[in-house]
Length: 441
View 1 (cartoon, helix red, strand yellow):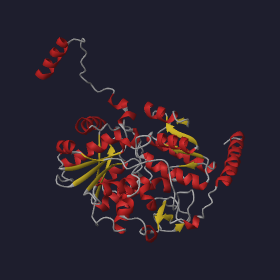
View 2 (cartoon, rainbow, N blue to C red):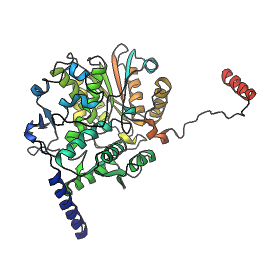
View 3 (cartoon, helix red, strand yellow):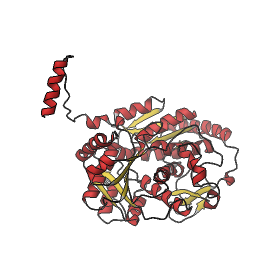
View 4 (cartoon, rainbow, N blue to C red):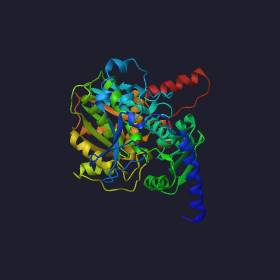
């Protein structure tokens, strides 16, 4: 790093530190009902903007005082609350009494009968985060948690490394919260996702490299500047937003757990957090104990977790992504080890599908259920079908497929698809001829 860069960083550090000192919350951190816990050695530590255990350098996550939670976290109380993810506040990393005006979450759980018939399932549901507010992906959930933590820690600048959906969510919610946003993305990201980030006024930086290289750079910047990177130093809080998918599935099934959940995997966090959500609900007595099988879905062109599961390995080997499914194109997944372990312990499996299968599945989901998903949802749908064909998911079981993003963001994936559109004169005779041809065909 040259002298001018160091000076720039130092100036930015002093400026942001001064703002952070003014913005520190008045609430006592000791009064919070959650803290950080190492996922490996179990060491507990106070809440802070960090993601690594100081003892063994393993990842940390948020742990809750469940005795405190069960006082108010009941089915009746939850039912009286607004239909968004804040209804589960006691199991989220926010202070008691925290309120937000952002109605994120509580997306539909759709009974997918036509899709189920097409793939061979009698009780298939689609958890449709393609309509999540405000930016049409499940990343709105995790960003809501991360920015709540950013404000509590006094950050005025937030950032992220992203394959698209996270960029959209950070930019939109930062604008609403009055925070400056810096977004780092691979230079070949889908144009729709880039535009959907720029429109909120965020600073967008394109990197000549893949996501893993972008993420590495963000980690280095987070070490230099006092910024809140949602998926770096705020990652433990950010990841807790994924749990709300699990809470909603259980509640929307009448406080019952499904037999199977099919989850797309990029960094690998979502699958583990839904498992964590189910475990917390069981421990609190809100659902009956049940072994839920978890199935991970990846694109063949970037499938380090799937390959490890199928190969019987405990750890994945990083890959260089080569797929149209850019939202899942993370070759060195941060939670890959935990995703592999969770899948295996649940009795589930992992599969991957080609880009051709992915596009076909996007069309299948749209044509059967009227849900237009991005490429990651095509992966989930195609993998669900493959798992049924393999006999790993049975027809009579209750299965939930997680759709995590909207198809309007990846229109380029369908650009080469051939559609037989008809152009006719504005005359009844012309339409009658057209109708006759279609009926004959």
